Image 1 (cartoon, helix red, strand yellow):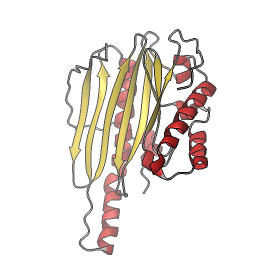
Image 2: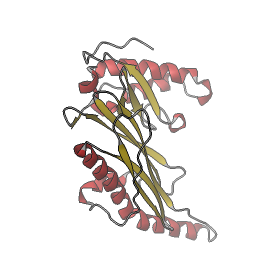
Image 3: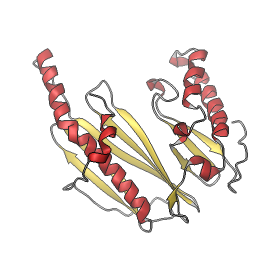
Image 4: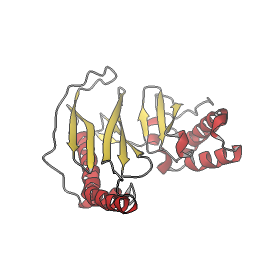
Amino acid sequence: MKTKKYWFYLLIVLIFSSCATSKVVDKNKSSKTKYKIEKISEKSKFLVTDIKYPQFDDYAFLNNIIKNSVENYYSSFKMYAESDWEELYKIRIQADSKAELPPFEYKVSFELSETNKYISVLFRTFVYDGGNHGSTNLLSYNFDKSKNKLVNITQSTGLSYKQLSQYCNKELVDRFLAEKNQGMQKSEIIEWVNEGTFPTPDNYEIFMLHENFVVVYFEEYTVAPYVYGEQSVKVPFNTSGQGTRPSSP
């Protein structure tokens, strides 16, 4: 079993039904646009689910992308959860008749930021499927309100991937070198960070926009071993979108 294997079956999944759903008006002052929170909550012997995602009052295009993404990813995972749980349970019983296996977990939470031009939504999906520990996957959507479309980090900030790479690389190397209790050599730190911050679009897909800066997120194992966890770097940029080179932190 692999935690991420559900990603490969996304296109064959039907939107699920009969899930508990509730709507709540958000009071977060950082969001100028009103939205409701859709919730999916399920519990069985093999799976505990707790999902929350936003639906905005005036942006149907963004709503459809978010809804389809969150629900399809979950449906794909759920398709195999019961059989995978049963398989793992049998293995544990054979090894130890008193062995107990907790249910798998699938939890989705989100964060929002909004500027005059953009809405940013960051999702954290925690998945536990019987291993030593769970894993958290990140996904973000950055939406241009006036143009009614999604944008990438270079389009929205004017920064190049090279500029982003240089800034994030220095920030992370300095940060990790200051944490002397993790036991990594300087060469190991530099190797991890160099790979995770290389100036390619794939390394800068997860971000949130603010008025004067963008926060770039790096998943577990991306720029450092698991013990360091998720990392983020706040990168300033020119709000005119001209892409001034950020100064070093």
